[in-house]
Length: 158
Image (cartoon, rainbow, N blue to C red):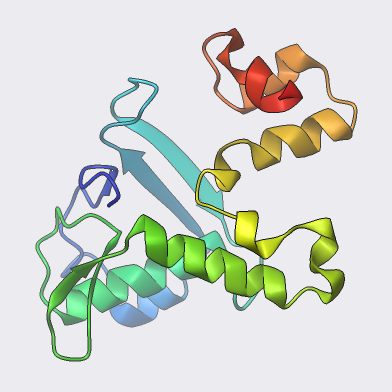
């Protein structure tokens, strides 16, 4: 199960924004209340990339609208959703792993990735590995990946 305090909505959505206003958003900021790196209250901003299905702003605003439609409290974590019977559910690591495997199966030849070996932990360092393969300096990768020590090295070279 995901950390229930990983991402929360700090202020109430209604009446601050209508669904139309949320749908038209081009920028969003989220606050991480707790993280495994120990940083609390860190904010991350995302701008719209214009993609209909892979836009962080669209994904978050759709989730906010979903939560508002189900009268979820303003402090509801973003990984909570309501099923067709209006039952409160949690996105699990198994659900994410299953979706990642399905996505890999849609790529011809699976891009050299064995879908059976995909797990949520695959997301932790894949961006850092891509930067390393692109020739980025380790110190820059440490900054971009928000690593606080050399703990990233086994992930990059292991």
